[in-house]
Image 1: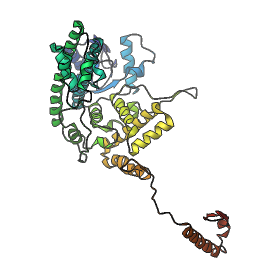
Image 2 (image 1 turned 90 degrees about the vertical axis):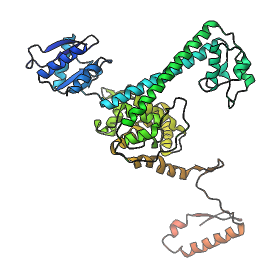
Image 3 (image 1 turned 180 degrees about the vertical axis):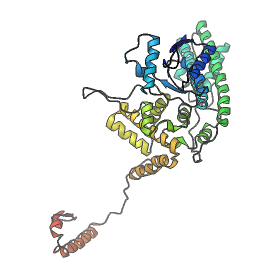
Image 4 (image 1 turned 60 degrees about the vertical axis):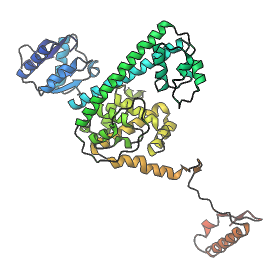
Length: 465
């Protein structure tokens, strides 16, 4: 299937013309599906290249066909393909023998949610690009605002940029627009705003501000759609937990309680796993869904994410090591979540630091992401809430019992301070031990005890027994 036409092949016993060509218009797609139904076809294998397969896939799925969406990379090295007609016949032969693997595709409800979340991610990236272009134009005009303000997209930066767009050039008036809690002084801000104000660059700033406002308006509309869609999603079957405290909201944070909605829909609190925050949890929900039965085990799920080792062997020799090259948004989020455990004081944080010490950071990140994927799989499939808590709290307590920090920053290694005994008292205890040792010398333990060295303070610091 390509962007202009679809080639369909069926068994010769089902149709006099086993190979057909259909256009990509909607009427032609329905005519293709009608022909497949008239031939008694129940399963269809289709090549998933680009986005051309999506309309046909939705029509086939709505008609009740069992659709196998096959990755073209799995069959690119197979012989026998000379044209589109022969390729469709070759795929029919492979599908007849069961040699084509079906790719994962979430249910329609999750696909709708995924489209909204991906669109919002595009808006956030587009807004960030506009901010970078504004900063570039200001730097070209020698307005070094970024040197005194860490983020020009906060409260002070947009106010000053919009004033510049409106035509204000007085540096003192521009500096007076700064927020009272900003660390930079107004004199420093005014000094940084002494630029040349080239007209063409000011025009660029004006256009970028308009595009930035468009992205922000679109993001607000998307958040309303997401809030209504999440509220219509039925609740999960897991246990209801008390949501843990969340860090302060970022500038791109949502304006509705996403954490409570995710916990209601999934039935579990994925954020109880250290390293996984609300945004990582929503990516898991929108990209994977709630049905973990699509993967037999946690190992299959980690392999689908591309987080399992892939040793390439040729002639009984390992010619390459690493992981498979898989473009997966969930795997990317899990890698970022694993990297945040570097300073996390929990069992998972300690495990990640051990991985970094033993394997190095490039190999430790996917290894820890593989561990997180297993925890997510068990929580979503078996609703094992306590298992994740045990990894993040109970073992955390065991780690902290060996090495913790007191309130004033001093390290506590499970040692207790005792009052130092005087020398005479220590000698008395040493004499008592010597007497008891002499009494037990006649026993069978005398041979082993004779090799002991007893430290005693005095003239003889070490006596050989």
